[in-house]
Every structure is written in C-alpha cells, then in structure tokens.
Image: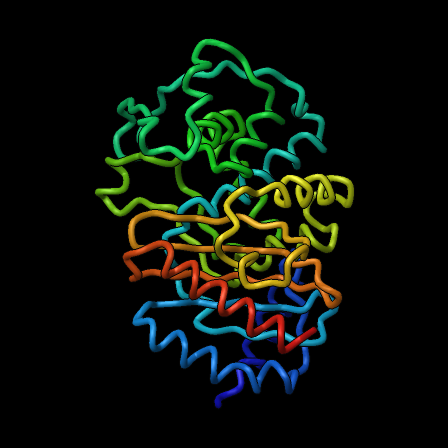
Length: 300
C-alpha cells in the first residue's frame, strides 16, 4: 500500500510555517497499517465516498484516507463557530453571559434576501418558541453543539461574523474548513455556495482543542466539555467500548453523514470520518462506528 506519511509531514511543516497549530507528523504505526486494508475494504463494500483522518494525540501514529477531498460540511461547521465564540470571549470582545435576542430572520449569502428557518427541519424546536426572548451566547453555543440547533448556530454566526470565524480557522492552519454562511440558506445552496470541509481540516481543529491550543487551554477545556455533551452518539461513540469519553460533533444532510471526535481512550486520539452517498443514516452511522471500532482495536 502506498505510504501517506510524506503528505502528513509536508502538511505539518506548512502548518508550522503558517504559524498555526500543526497536525503533528508521526512515524508509521505497524498496527494501524495492518488495519488499513480491512477498513478500506469495508468502505469499498459500502459503495460510499468516505474520507478518514486519524491521529494519536501523542504523535505516535496516524492514518489518512482521501483526507484532503472537500465535502459539504453539514453541521461539522459548528465546530469553528464554537472556536470563534471562545476566541472572541478570550479577547474580551464579548462574554458567554451576554444576552442575545432570539429571532428567526437571516440574510442569504446569494443575494442578501431575508430567509427564515423551518423548525421542522431543525433538530431542536424549543428555541423557536423563545422568539423575542433572550438567551446567553453560552446557552446558544450549548444548543448549537449538543443538539445541533440550526437556529442557535445562525444567531451566533450573525453575532460573531463569518469573517471572524474564518480568521479563527486560518489561525489554526485548518483552511480546508471553509465557512461561508449560516445553515438552511436555500438560495445559496442552489448556487453551490456551501460550507465545506476536509477530514484533515476537521482533525486539525479537534486536535487543537484536545491539546489545549484552540484559543487557550481554559477555552479548549470548556469547548471539549461542551462537545462531550453531544447527544447524537450513533457514529464514532457506537464503535467504542462503553464508557469511553468522547467529545465530538456530527453533521448530517441528505446522503451525507459525518462525525469528528476527540476520543479519550488510554491512548487518546482524534478521528474524523466524512461520508456521502449512503441514503439511510443508520447505514452510514454503522460504517462510521465500524471504522472507529477497528482503529480503536489497532491502537489501544
């Protein structure tokens, strides 16, 4: 099998030169390399397009499969929104306790026209019943991550500004994550103006949180705690031993299912699996869980 390690080494060097947080280069790990053909065979049998980025946090091993191919980010783009929020809080530009009025009107990236979110298309409905009331930025970030609220996400993006979020991503050398707009912007979607990500970029962001390098150590710990309260656990967590601590963010739209996780195993690691082309979420989740199961078995 062709080695992917030179690509990882070059990516780490470029990240370091850019002043960001590198995904640390690792030497080939025999157990991971032995597990790789079986994982690739399972992926091939699924008929899906799948990208994988895996890295032990001590830098002792990793594995990357089509990790630089862009995918629609779906709700994984909420990770850089979370980082952007904590960065602005760290800089004193805002406080997590600041109130924000809840409303349901936003402006399309396509032409600036107003649009609203449909509660039926969101994974959380209570916030829609709070229109006109206020919620703190911290409360909104909790809803954005743990129950993947689209309304909370758009409110935060509007408060933070897309360009500020993009700067946070760039500072961490994760430019493969391209945040362009809020969610459910149908006009922008029809024009192909979407948020996209690569598996490597998501791994870079999650690894920065895991290592205490996203904003600062205290902010990273707080973000990891929010990610641990994730309520959608049919992907990566389902492939791990019961009781394993997992801080992660999922993403799902039609035919697309993703999961990006910090796994606090005996040998902690970050794993990102992006999938497209599987119609039933239960099947894509089962594939993601199987990839997690095999990589856990190979490294623990």
